[in-house]
Image 1 (cartoon, protein in one colour):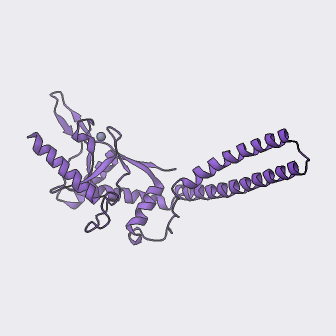
Image 2 (spheres, rainbow, N blue to C red):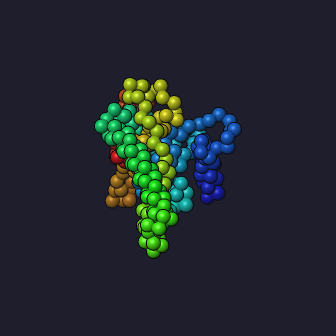
Image 3 (tube, rainbow, N blue to C red):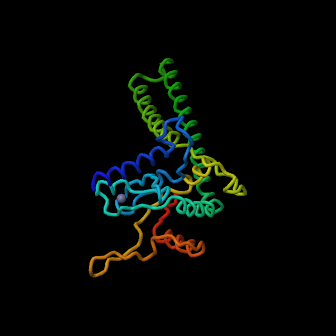
Length: 248
Ligand SMILES: [Zn+2]
């Protein structure tokens, strides 16, 4: 039985990888978008969840460590209802003070970068001035060297800060909140999600073990046919399993 299970797992993973735009060769067929790829973490082992497709269950995200038995949780979750749940959160946050804070923090960073640039230019000017004084004989060599060393050290410090501020992934601008979520492109939705959400932790389906060692799920694991009951069930599932960690 083992080889069959491993093949199934490997198959699921391959299909998932092919669906992941980052891993897909440039010209690979029709693009399939996994809006939350890379953002999800396993609540059991902390590992990244990967994308997969199963013939009957459809698209999902799961902990790949369940294949090697490193992770005790075997965390898996259906993709579409989860994506809808997270979209709801992002849309709500989009208009919130928190979103404005994030945009603001980017402004602050831009201001800091331009301040550092002008400080670096000033240091360079002081260095030139020290050299002119040395050439005019107004400063002796030991003084000139001591001053240059100090200026170089201050310049290096600023250059390091400048580099770290500018090399962080540039934050996209917050889209206009009056736009409808549906009108945003998949790329914009993803950018907005990344801007507001640091990571999303997925816990295992809530359950308890009885005295005979049998596991009982506290929320029904099988979908209802009735759309209203199903919506209620999914809401309870996500409330219990999904922890969204905001960026700011
Ligand atoms: Zn795990």
